[in-house]
Length: 388
Ligand code: SAJ
Image 1: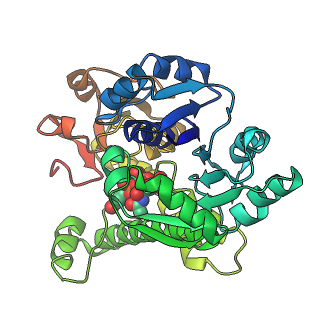
Image 2: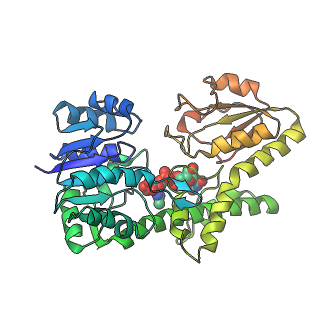
Image 3: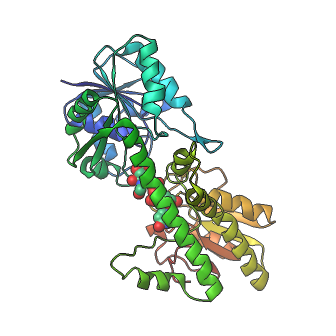
């Protein structure tokens, strides 16, 4: 049976570890967070993801998935740790620290797969030299994750995957691993191309969202309804204008474009798109101010603090920036989110109460929960959610 170690028990690492365990592999999940390890070892999940609870519980129960803090020996190592952005560049500190344990335990011929999103060239110029220095002949591949939160399990299984080995042998060996649970096609390439594919995907989405946000601003200047206009434009068979909103959040789309242009002399469009999307919370706060200057009042409610609808993930949420902008403008701000227990700022848990309290309600995240529940008369609807 394949012995697999997955480092990083987060939004991608844990579902992957569970899918591999369910497919029959002996999987050890590694993480530095003991609280997380404790939960998983009891068959529980540290975050909400449809279907994951039952899958993890089942794999832990039969002993196919275990967790620990230290990296053990194995035949396959998967690295799925965060790669945050720092100073508009990819910060590899978690990858490098995860790699230390792998370099120590890996044997000649083992396969190391990097799933974390990185700037092109990382496998060749950072991972490979670490093993060379230790005198180990290890196979290395980049297989970027492409699943969307809320549908992670389904997408990890069904989506096509990019398998980019530093050598062709690494690609072939990685295919053996991914065949265990992926039903999509496994597309072979080299590691630099695989690293770029992932960044192209998320940059494509970021630039398209920036276009939507800009078209929404132009619609305002023209006095036309943006949502009606894109609804009609999107009836053209080759047009798919994205949705405008309060900004781009999450741990991928707001970050990955920077990795792509980090060392590039080009990238003007990508940089501008990032700036347009990052500027949205400020723009929405200014709109709120204009509305309140007309109608009077100082109390603003933000509905939805996650980075997008129907999930509980608040990482890089534009609502956080919106909250801060409004407070800096002198407003009294309260926030509500039915899916979040704890946030950076206090949350009101009574939707009716917060709407009665507010002079203006901003619908920042259109959770399904809010359907037919927006009763406040003064609403700034960033997503054309309630038609107000
Ligand atoms: N958003 C808009 N308008 C839109 C679509 C999204 O403003 O039309 C906003 C969302 O509200 C959110 C942000 O963009 O704040 C990002 O949301 P998302 O649903 O576009 O993407 P993520 O970050 O949840 O997941 C993306 C996915 N990539 C693509 O769709 C190309 C996913 O497949 C990747 O695996 C993931 O990034 C990742 O981990 O890289």
